[in-house]
Image 1 (cartoon, protein in one colour):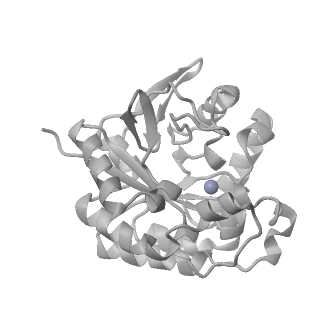
Image 2 (image 1 turned 60 degrees about the vertical axis):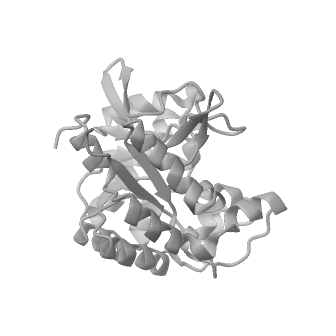
Length: 283
Ligand SMILES: [Zn+2]
């Protein structure tokens, strides 16, 4: 059997930039909130170092502008720097021209911090769906080689249910783009999210590891992702509906131990590295 391939990635954003908080923390007030991304990333980077894991960091351009030292710290530790867009707008809100401008601004912020041009992109809140398929053409035009924005699940606000859950190539007029979706597990004719975020904290750790092991047995490269605010149980409480608050805060105090146990069982590497080793990208 070929060697199992597991990727780990982080969407580098602040606690107040989550889509669920958009009402209480509007974009025009972001600079007023307490920045907590550096200490949270510090915890993550220390653990990754200890586990000898190189991951992919999908930076918001907004963060890279304000925290160039954090970008450099990730680079120096050997992590891949990729783009999460500038300020977490949904693709449907940006439109094709807006996405061009958003990506350019993010590329400039990353370059100013010393990072090479990103090869990978992940849209805010998995907003690449059938209605925003044009985003692939924009990414291709701007020289990106892979995307991780499609979530092949059924969900009220995002997802492309019939989409190939393994790494695949999306054919476009001008060429093709590699898609590496966050991991899902097939059960009862549907794909269930297992690759991170709230699900990483919500599912019992042993069950989540069993599901990822199931994907490993199927020979599927996996993609797990988390956010720095998921490692920050002390973050301020934000006014939101009870269900949104629950999803945001469940298990925050044990994410670090969870990730440690996960990395012990599944040695992870960056998305770029998995894509190169599986033959989808050139070195
Ligand atoms: Zn995000």
